[in-house]
Image (tube, rainbow, N blue to C red; front, side, top):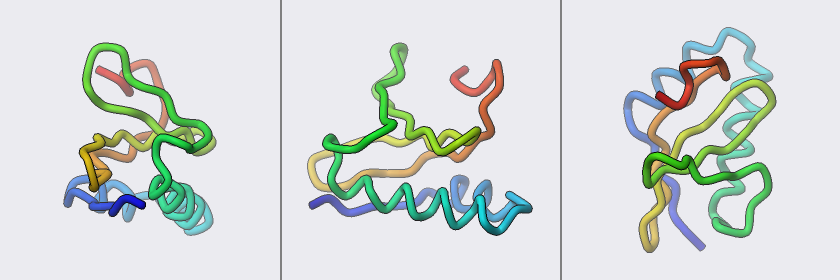
Length: 83
């Protein structure tokens, strides 16, 4: 099992989401990353060493090391999400 670590930027982005149910849904889905790489809705971002978790219209961008999954960003999906 891996440990989940949130960057300050990602926590700020999560708190800015106005819909409390969406926040809870994202937080719950991030909790499934303890079993990474055996998770659903996760893909590697082609141009970087990062991965993304899809939660509805939101994307959780994260990196993976041996024991720690680091949540980098929480963004709403649009044409600039992965740039």
